[in-house]
Image 1 (cartoon, rainbow, N blue to C red):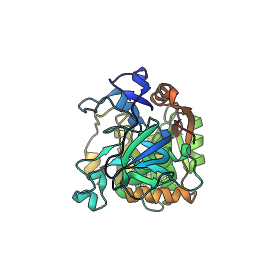
Image 2 (image 1 turned 120 degrees about the vertical axis):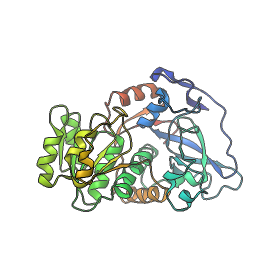
Image 3 (image 1 turned 30 degrees about the horizontal axis):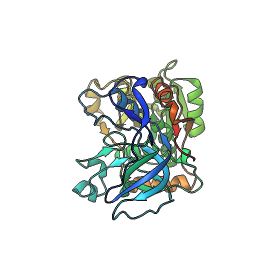
Image 4 (image 1 turned 120 degrees about the horizontal axis):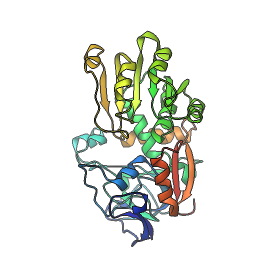
Length: 345
């Protein structure tokens, strides 16, 4: 089968398009014939490497998979050959206390498809049966591949961690990212008022089309001043961020008393500094978040089926252009998701 392999960390040129044996499903596993795979900034980290983290190289990246069930391993249930499916990206043991209490992100064995085992940038991928979900009706493979990681991450951040309530004022950074395009829709669905930030006027306009009440270009404007105008003297209730060092300290200054800062990443740098008097004087909460549970993904897929949440796709490219896609992700030239087609969709 054709597959993209990372054998050593490096630039986009380190993504090797090669031939690998078709993987065989083990007990309780399902083999998917991949039609489309969505890219995320996670794929960039897998390719570049992360200081202090060891990836199991060589590895096939890609965690957002849509395709057709091809074969079932011994004892696998819940799907049949030919079923159109989407794959949940979070890998867990399924046995520990966290998993059995529907809090899978806290599983001590948790990993991500394409990060801790071979993923979907290939013609076939093998996954645990628990990770296979029916594809939402009316959604083709390219659209379905743009849903799992970003919507699951944003949903868990806003619902499970920040517990956003109707009428609350939420600022969402980097509106053009996959997570943030999902978060704008989810926050609006929850009844919140959304202020978005983005790096261009064009991205600000698209954020408003997605449901943001206002948007500010952080390259030409001051998002702190805009947040104060938006929220008034009481300040924001929630800031959703995955930028990190560039936005952390100023984001805390935008929050009102009892405000919540929720983050799933730090693309601009991992060392975050602030005057911590802000935190205890204003009773702020700083909340980390990673992915979400399977029941949350099931809810998201239902909402997508109903048309209440919609994947945002910037471009669809063939698998052979994976290096170009990575370069565009790193350059922040994308609004929404990049999706690679692998087989007929």
